Image (cartoon, rainbow, N blue to C red):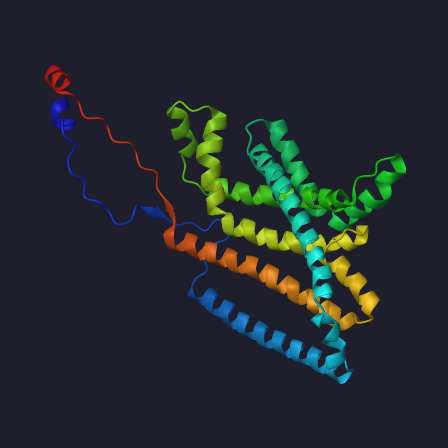
Length: 307
């Protein structure tokens, strides 16, 4: 009987061109045809209104001489761009620090909120709700004026990074938790049945799939995080907006300088937004492969006769 069920030589299996996939909307429901039509109309109207506002703004700048050629001559000097490039490096440095530490803390908070222990779940949930409610600017002022009053004075980078880590870790936690909840049931139980410890199942099975599912959302959050680093001018951290402010004061060219800084932000954040859209399209097109069960090993001749 067993020999018939498990043959000595594995039978040929027809190869499938594509593994079974499943699709799911992780953060919101998939819009229907009517909703898509409304979104398209709203997008077209928004683009038209935005183009009109930009055109009116450029017309006002031109009428007041802000677009005259002599006002843009300083930006042909490589030293000016080098000065702004140093600020851009500061922005990227703060973004990387906050992204790494905020994501690590977000993973801990996400699994803490899904913990079976009520006190862990309660503490994680309270932290996430408070961090998402308190304004980042208030925490920055606390780091800038409050902590030095009790003798704590951290470096300038951390006066900006710590408030952003507090705020963004809560957002990362909710994104990762949504990714974990989007997985098919039984992933963790299957890993535990194979002899993995709980931490191994989470680290090797659950977390990689969850992060893959929400990668577009994580990249989108990086765009928001990079924009939040512009608050560094409050603590005099050397980032792009702070350098632009100093340069505008030195050159006495307020509008052209901030237009150049805006263009740099558009290029960098636009690149990240395009990456997020590409990852979203790729994830939607390919889906996530369903786990395949390992094949049973073929029995030897002696074991087949014994069965």
